[in-house]
Length: 185
Image (tube, one colour):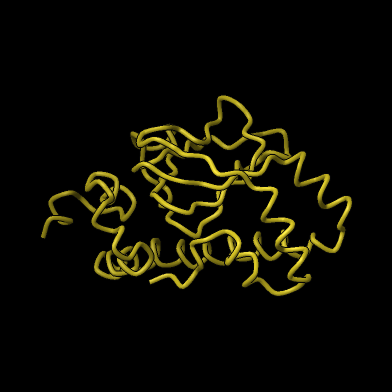
């Protein structure tokens, strides 16, 4: 199971670089938001100028351009979400929706930019977050694209832990690229 702290403050404190005080100040910028099951958090229809940290609940990212609503990623507590392509003025075609009621922490990009202008050394925290996200995506992609169905299934159990059983079967089958028939075995 993932060892990432599920509380935003704990997660920021676990990162290398910067002082404890700076990490606590960054954590204070985030605001708690309750999300309802089925609510779309990120979509290509409009820009979402925020960074989100999942404290409770499950989310999925899917594209309506691929085979009908194929699940591209699952997100659980301890993950960060942001709209890809924001600074390229070209948002991705992906949607991110809540699979359950959720609690997230949110900070808007303008607030984050002001914080980084005041505390330029905090850019190391942002880079560490992006690096962790990239490494996790690379590992996940390697497993999903190069492994057997059994290994993909085990990876999902390890990644989601007890939340694995809360993911709707059709979403899980789509994510693991296996049929519902094989998933039920």
